[in-house]
Image 1 (cartoon, rainbow, N blue to C red):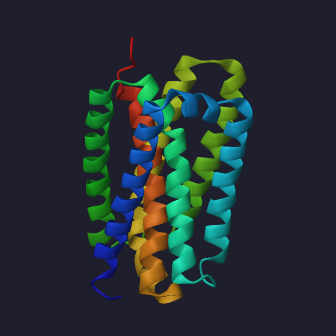
Image 2 (image 1 turned 30 degrees about the vertical axis):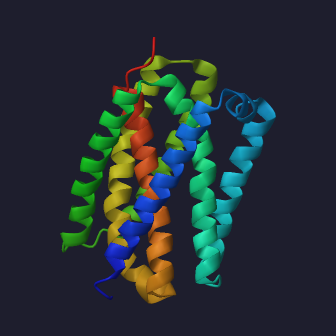
Length: 213
């Protein structure tokens, strides 16, 4: 593994987060577009597009070119930015910035653990995936239950899961480099860490974000 892999990965991660937050804030400033995006049909289309891009990216990463990998990552970051418009509507900007800072600190701590630990944490993958599927199913069930306590528990469990994913994905970068090469490993690794960061951020925001009056 080349020493430049991690700096490249974090550069792509920062770029993806920047695209998402700028897109979300720009959308928040345009009420007409925002209303159209959050209509039921548009939201379903957005969700389907995000899932489609994520699945295509994950399945085809070994065979796709570097340019295609960049396009997939940029497109996913842009599409996710559209869903961020609701965050700027719901929460106070100061609260969003604070939670983003907390997320960054936690991300750094667990990324450093994943990088420096001598322990093989590759076995975490299957456990974390099963736990993630579990909270997704529970979240669907809670749509009908409307339990605030259940929501709280799911947010806390989600935070634990994505902290684990951060360490796991950081360590997995070493294997990605051998599997698909440094350039694509940096882009796809950034995509995986992007998902970890965004999901951690959203769950921390659910717990600590200050809702607008």
